[in-house]
Image 1 (cartoon, one colour):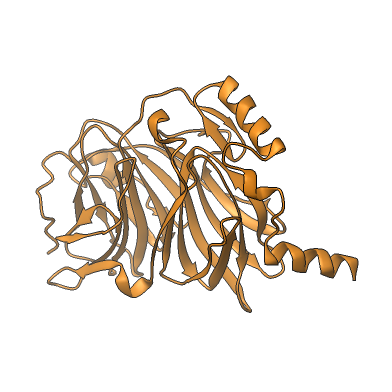
Image 2: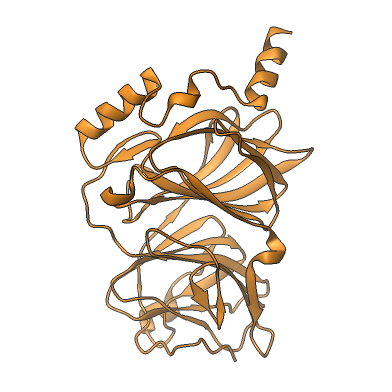
Length: 314
């Protein structure tokens, strides 16, 4: 039986659920966007959640960001990242990159090697006091990510951010955030029970299999249909944690993400996220004139962009 490091006395109920449908993004890539779509523009502090899939030459060539953080978690394949500061690297299956865009970054994210690269990208908003901090990275290979399994072997968790089952992530989050990757064996005898601070917003995104999300003591929940892959479930307020069951014949894999709401106005124009429209106008001006954090963008192109241009000319 899985026991968390803290008891969950009052599990939350699921308030809303969505199926993330595929759409085209970037240069030929396909994403399933569950947060940041027209039904759910913002789930404080989360701006976007994409499940992405790309095969070369498709990908996400040179583009800017300001005012938030991006969390890229690779599920399959690999992605090469490079930016105008000269930072370059490849993240592979199981690796995590936690990037603080802060006052400004221009970068590219392109598939590395043959085959299809798949992963999740989460955008985490920053409070006004942190929006103009210097850009930075926290990168962790799969082998360095905290992971643990319950004594009965039913539940395994990888801790991207926060803490679960006694394992703690080394990631430092400017916006307090929990990011957990759970795998539950078929017909697990007990549910996953994970504490979540009562004031935080929380959601689940299902990667594989299907599960029942919420306490099975509730008659309505017992009759509820399980949620399968590509479903986003928003947890309601009023509880101290969450409960998830796998009654199916297949493994269940899902990410549980939660964060402390910032509670500030949000003004967004694509990859720029500030607090007011005036700040957005200033950001567009900074980017167009290569000032206030975007100076190095004036004479920079990623190697991926140069290769694409040469292929187009040829």
